[in-house]
Length: 256
Image 1 (tube, one colour):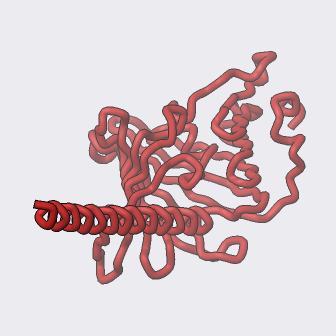
Image 2 (cartoon, one colour):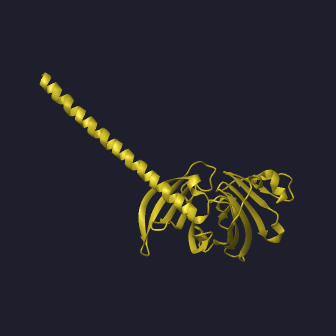
Image 3 (tube, helix red, strand yellow):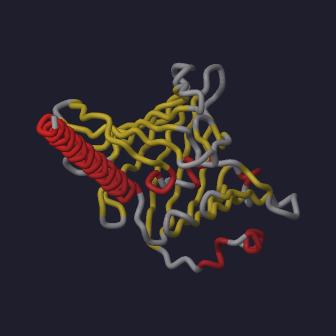
């Protein structure tokens, strides 16, 4: 009887040890996958914009069914992906309006209003462009990434990442993101609502050398429900700038 009990205990001990090893191994793989997804996302962010303080001009051309195309222009000053100023330069009637983003807090200064007004990152700015699309292009700071699969498109291999919002304050609830495996360049994104409805898509195009790296200078954002309605963002005149922290405060908005 004792011999049978010893054999039983030995078998159970061995099974528990195997299960523990498999669990630990699985956890290690999951940790490695999360780390790799994070590295891919951070590299793609660095391709889109530099980490240092910089200035760039953005022209947005929006096409809406039944309406004439609308053109708007902005000057963006950004520092460290967490401090951004978005200043309207056209149309002239809105010149002087300034958006300030600090971390995930966003305000707009209107010359006709004494105090800055709070905004949400997901609120529509113009056409298919949300406030956060211009003011906060920091995917690695706003989303938890996971590698879904690899896709081959026109002979190029792309990592497909699923980005889940870290909280409800970020621009989109979920993003599917295609990143070139060989050079970390963003290729395409799909943006989803909290109810998992596809809102719009984005293509990253026309890579050119700006501030020492090849960066996308043309973004095409298309409405997922209304075909033919899109906003095209064109980035130009990017340059590094030494931007003091005091610029990115609400008290300074009426002085810019």
